Length: 405
Ligand SMILES: [Zn+2]
Image (cartoon, rainbow, N blue to C red; front, side, top):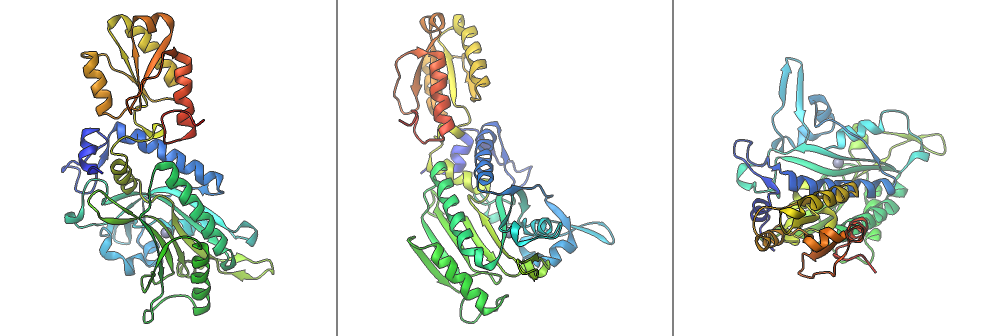
């Protein structure tokens, strides 16, 4: 693996400018294109799995975060509140849960709506010390792939099993290779919210959902509000961090007085499950850049097809083909500056999955010969067929460069 900060510079994926502030990187067009493709995939995966997406603002009134408990327990990790007037203070949120609790509370809820899955790819902020910041792996402005699943206690097992299935699917498609699973449970002498019976049942359901998975149990590591599952990755420097998480919460439903009407007509308290399939876009990309060494699968490569006209006579043909590729939904560029050899080397340095060389014969015959990033060169084929081949690989979101058989 290669350090993502080095590749981020070389491939122009993101920049950390001291004038913008430490831990506040800027995504450049290439990095933004890759991230956009990944965000689109994650939203599509969630939509198919019954999630409802919302938008909520990255800051809110001080009272919201007092009610949620963040200002009580978490203030050291937050930016200080901003005062607009004597009785109007705002907080940059350190988590999305408070807003999502208000989504649940926006109207009365019935047991028929549960599990209610509220998802958002939203911004939040952590006042990380400047010493720990680096590239995309530790940042102060975080774009989290987040969701809160409100369910009845008896639904928790099935819900967690389904979340773990989604995490496995997302990891396989993106190329994430988990280094281990951790199940954080109650310790003997800590204080926790929620009653013993609910905790015991919740821990049992998490354990059952992890049946068949190689998992390390860590008693005493649970949050005070509930047990959790963390899925770990290891970066190029050998550091371990969490990429995906499933956390049960008995506390926020109490604090926000969340309830639904049960099948018996009585008011009941839901359990809130905080879950992230792939964590923050920042940490995810720090990892993906390293694990793929910048050579992303074609479906989220910043540029998927680079067209190289051999000389100026093929420039029009290349421009026409680029327009067709764009209309087919591909990310394409034409490179006509410098010698052909230098341009082929540059395509390889940029890890572009497909390079199409257009000589006089190809331009006249409407054909294209594709060079793949791994060095293979395909026989010349009609340009439409070449675009179809790339389109099929991209649509299948496969890891290989040829369509799945
Ligand atoms: Zn949350």
